[in-house]
Image 1: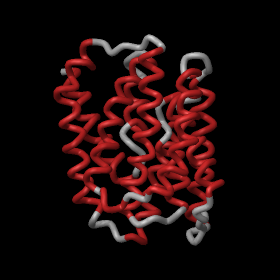
Image 2: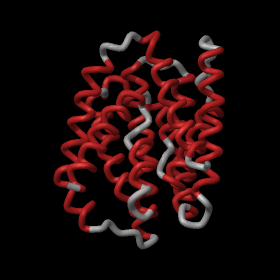
Image 3: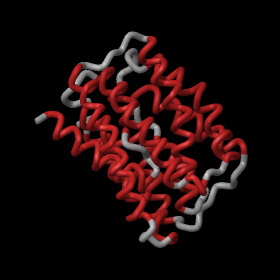
Image 4: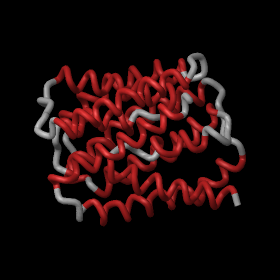
Length: 240
């Protein structure tokens, strides 16, 4: 039964993660970390997230923007290694609380200042890549931070999703290697369940591909904001 529950979680997370650009980890890490050791959760969800990035790139490959990918990805790789190395040393609740407050503040700003745009400057890319890479490494959730910066660029939907996936692929590869080198291993349930979980993540991404094309561009930015707010509230409530 556990495999069925986890498979349903993977399907839902892949669907929402692909549509919003967050990645599956933003949903899966908070849920699975309640029931499983945090280190194993990071490794397992990181593997699923890695494949989710491959699906995004494959399904929306016409939207790849390599300037943004490299601008975010290079600093993200370095920051991801640092975050992953610290993942078992710092209190995750504190970091999640800070992230939750930041996401809520940004979402309020997004709705009040709907015309706000970040220019595609190198400094904004470096900042976004560093923050998202560090948070991805330290507690497995970097997609929400990355979405803050990418959504502010107001990119077309296909560009947003595929570019977010390519950036995350660089970051996830780095942190997965760091977790494994640090001695983290998957328990049998996660290991053998990959036979089911990986195809399920592709199914979720395919469903998202059909749905996201029905969302008008002008509503897509607000759609992202709603999920950012939900994630922020979750992290803050976890502190209570």
